[in-house]
Amino acid sequence: MLDMQQIAQYAEQYYNDILHFCAQKLPVQDAEDVTQDVFLLLQHKAGELEEKNIRAWLYGVAARKTFEKYRENQKNARRLTDLDEADTSEAVVLSDENIQTGQASDIEQLKNVILTKLSEAERELYKLVHVDKEKYAAVAQKLNITSKAVSVRVSRMRDKIKNYTSDLFISTKED
Image (cartoon, rainbow, N blue to C red; front, side):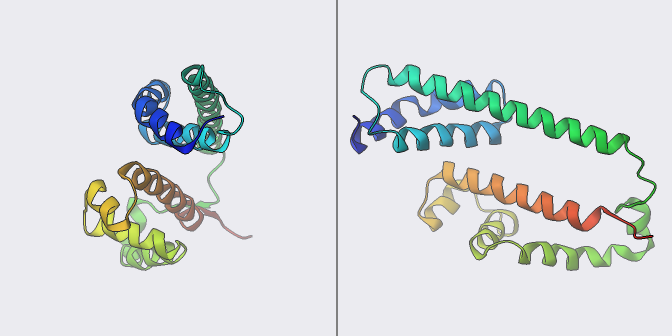
């Protein structure tokens, strides 16, 4: 059975090692997410774990979660490839031609639509990181969280923006 002080000690001791382990197979943002998940699980399972072999437990969880994320990324990559190979003759896609023919003025409006779909906290994070160009350390200090938490939140926010963007820019024409 682990207490919170021991968990904090293990996080301090092994966080960078687990992050490096995950980053060998995943992009940095995914590796950071997986590493955070590993230590959240450690905190959640603290009552069930004993002090011996924590390092092995952490690496085991990291290996499993890394593999799951890797498989998820591969599946998403296959979906994108399938989408690229599909008949896109009915798709409306924002292209250079659309931009040159006057639709570029609508991009700012579309950006605002996307930003309204984010939560207030995500919009503030977007402003700090992308508009004000603040470093993660400065953002962390302003939001009273760690730099790693900022990185994870930015990654998740960007994923939401990508999903909203694809919903807006790629849609099928109605017959």
